[in-house]
Image (cartoon, rainbow, N blue to C red; front, side):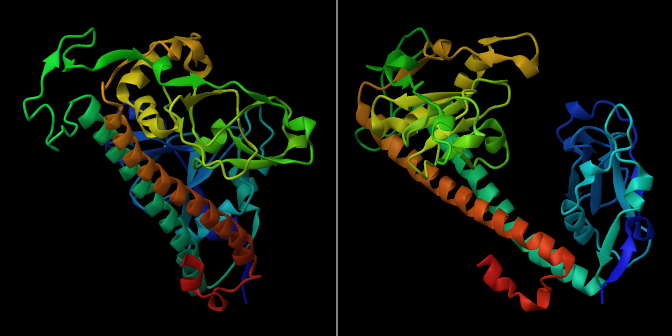
Amino acid sequence: MWEKTKWGEIASLEYGKALKDYKNKTTGYPVFGTNGPIGYTDKMMSRGPGVIIGRKGAYRGVHYTDSAFYVIDTAYFLKPIKNNLDLKWAYYNLKNTDINNLDSGSAIPSTSRSDFYALDTLLPSIKEQIKIRDLLSSLDNKIELNNAINKNLEEMAQALFKRWFIDFEFPNESGEPYKSDGGEFEESELGLIPKGWKVKKLEYICRIDTTSVTPSATPDETFELYSIPAYDEGKFPVFEAGSTIKSNKYKVNKGSVLISKLNPQTKRVWAPLCLTPDAVSSTEFINFLSLNSGNRGFLYSLLDSESFYTYLCSNTTGSTNSRQRVLPKSTLDFRFVFPDNEEVVYQFSKMIENYLNLMQTLIYENRKLAILRDTLLPKLMSGEIRVPLVEQEQVTG
């Protein structure tokens, strides 16, 4: 039998403390605020593992860390009162609880400790908590592994682009690195470039597609929507009925590359999956289409390059980070070096497309894993599904 209890009987919420300079550090102990990790510090507040619960703000998240950590004064961290509470199980249980419904009634939405302590919960034995934790963690671990693989693929693609088109070590006719094998160079407005190569504007290889779609005109149709929140939550589109999409969108094609024109300091470059014929994007994206369909891999890498990112950030309108935007037309003036032999671009693009295809496969797999996890979560926490009845190997395989 599971014990009916209240959170105040099994755990306490410990206050975070104000902290300076955490935003400027890139190493140390992770610092958490109401919405998750926000920086690093040399100070440790608590050893890991830890569950962090948002205290102030319209959205107050629940986060978990295995490592030692620090919490600022906009959040709490959870401390078990007895040894019958597994913190990772508690994290999953609280992910299944709408913390944002707890509101103290102050001008700034906030969670009070007394309201939290009054929350009812069902507490399994510590043994069953661990089994539930392990099952859900196996799904999250696979998602994290896929994300790590995709991050590595992105870095490999960026490194290959730099080697071929920045360092000019692309394979010459003999298959040797061009620059190291004594390739000839000539002066250009961008410095020394391989002989015969030219400086081109972005408009030379792509155009901006602004084909407009009105989803509300077909209210019963399901649209594959590429939005900034969807990008930030795992680079997977959301699927919504036309009746729920109130504004016009851009048509998205398989050959599209999307970049966010909103707040370019946050880099967002997206090669859409286009799982259905009705793919559309937010108008906060710029939709680039390669003029040569075989060169999309090169276009993606160019838009993902450090030089293009720097160009975007220096060509914005708006005075604050939250309101800055890029004028789409200005992006087409970006200058880059282009080979005299398009076979070089084609061969490079083929390799990048292979990377993109694998990345998209893993993104799609992550979506299925997340749906499975989110479906199991409430059933496991209510006892509707008991872990011994579920074969973990079947779930993760």
